[in-house]
Image (cartoon, rainbow, N blue to C red; front, side):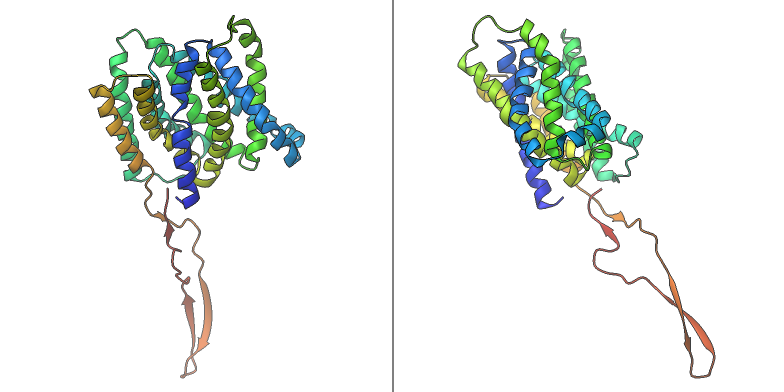
Length: 325
């Protein structure tokens, strides 16, 4: 990846690694609907003025409303509620580790969206290791009464894996702000009635308010713009691999701030997921898919005969293949 891609990748690893902590803090005092509404409303309020200032927002929404609606439902409206509700019963570190299944699902779904992204043996091995890490973490919960929460995280994973493919195929020409801001505003409108009905009877604590503010500003407004730029920079499949880095942040934050235990299973899962992250983001050589063109020319020999010569394509540095996959 380019230097810009790595910077965006590192940023996403952090800003979408801490939401699990923030959600866990907030959902202990307010309903999932209030959490999602506040998060979306704050981010939309911050981003909409910039999107409007760019100009052409109305035309963008009119021309792309179908894929934008699909993106909003699959990336925000559905997954953010299911993830928030799941964290009422799962630890923040467990939720963060389970979300690491996104790249595996993304690989499987990419073929249905016509992706021609090359996957070498190294990347497939990395994805397999990551899946093994998710399995190590998930199995103990299957008999622990958290089947519903695990199902909600699975739905979240499915949404997170599908939405980037939609953005890459049908929304790649839409400016990041003009995609993000309307989708967040729509999500806020959808959850406004439920948030009003389930609002707390008294003002939440400063800790909860800080968590909600961080979710809206850092984990949503800043993160979404960076995420869409990352998709454009490195492609939808590789863009989601930062979810292998998120668990490091989620586990560390849960242990430091919420005293969540670091069990042997969590350590083993994290080791597998980290190894998978390194391998899944690596790229191998890919053959140039451009057709080879041949040209012929005629030349006269000294004996008077005419000879046809074939000119081979000139080989330039980097013309035989390119990194990535």
